[in-house]
Amino acid sequence: DARTGQQLQQLTGHTNWVRSVAYAPDGAALASGGDDGTVRIWDARTGQQLQQLTGHTGEVRSVAYAPDGAALASGGADGTVQIWDARTGQQLQELTGHTGPVFSVAYAPDGATLASGGADGVRIWDARTGQQLQQLTGHTGEVRSVAYPPDGATLASGGADGTVRIWDARTGQQLQQLTGHTNWVLSVAYAPDGATLASGGADGVRIWDARTGQQ
Image (cartoon, rainbow, N blue to C red; front, top):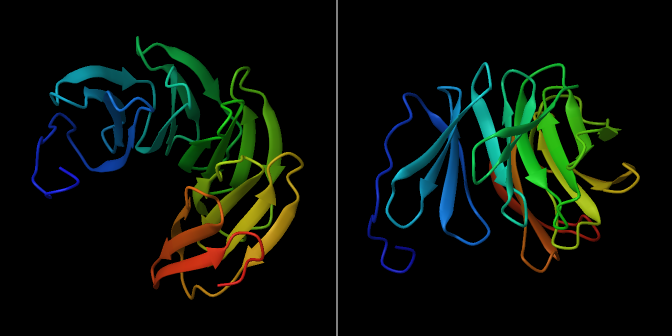
């Protein structure tokens, strides 16, 4: 319970670490991905497991719902991004191209594109066809997190090189390189108004002006 802090449900079924969780846009379901290689979909009200999605051949590192809730993306240690029908659990697409583990996936707000961050950098995909549209290079290590702002015009990424980078989501051009972290950046997230960007890493949390890149 977000107001009282009381635990409402404990969802059991995964047989190893759970790496990522994401609510469906309507809040009715919750997806989880874990080291047992499965994606699971749960009824967010009752905690009942609705689907177990199998297809990855290694750990599932990240899950993300499409904005309309119809599809669910997952990225894994097998180097693939899988797109699933969120209602039936059927695999719709397998996006291949990464040469190492995929650590993070994120849909653009309009649902047209999907970003993935992995051991070999950032890639942007057509969410409908699965075609790779961009490969964003600049990080000198693994990319652990990707996130779109509400307007979808840019994309943020954080990586093992200790930097946060902001990219033009359409052209793939790097717009900003935010330096200050002294160790790996493991997570990035935009504020709801898109004005600020938070990054979390081995050395703590930093908040940035998303337009200027100033800390």
